[in-house]
Image (cartoon, rainbow, N blue to C red; front, top):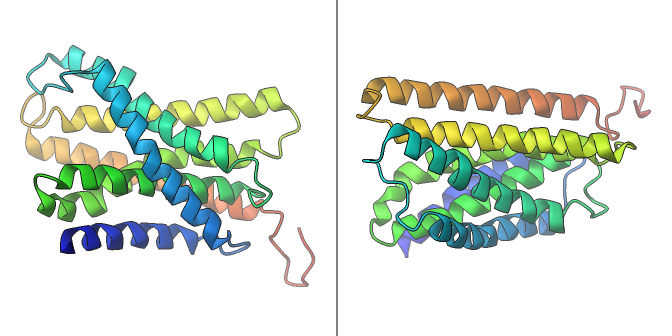
Length: 235
């Protein structure tokens, strides 16, 4: 039970960290909770789909090409699309989804829920893995989702729906590619890449993704309809 409590604490810490960034117009707690729950539920169809499409999972002993195809064509698109579907299908149309920052908040919260369910799955045989997955794997899922979450936030007020769909597709593709690249580097540790080089590459990818997310968040705040000037009038 203590291990599950640790997993919950890690998940809540990530949700709180991003919810507090939505400082101009905070989202209702029940909507944030729903995003987390939907993200956790999204893990199960992703798990089933991956098992069906990759019955032998990703074998580290396979060739680099086989691993890359499995990760870029199955694992990363399935996981990102399941997280995306949870937000797009249930939260996007809600009236409280009303500024660019909301796409990021709901996407990263759903990603945290997904990572929480995934962490519980991996903890079944080795519960202490939460010490690595709680901060690391969860952050990775959050950053991958940040690409398409930001795109969703920008797309909603766009009058040209065809252009809006292109923005969302580009964000989703970016999240899938970064996710696939992260996993591929991980599966190259002590094979095509020395462990130290692989870890540095993973860290560099996460840092770059974090900076991209911070840039999106700054832009979202700058263009928020709830941003006010010092005299109290909306920008």
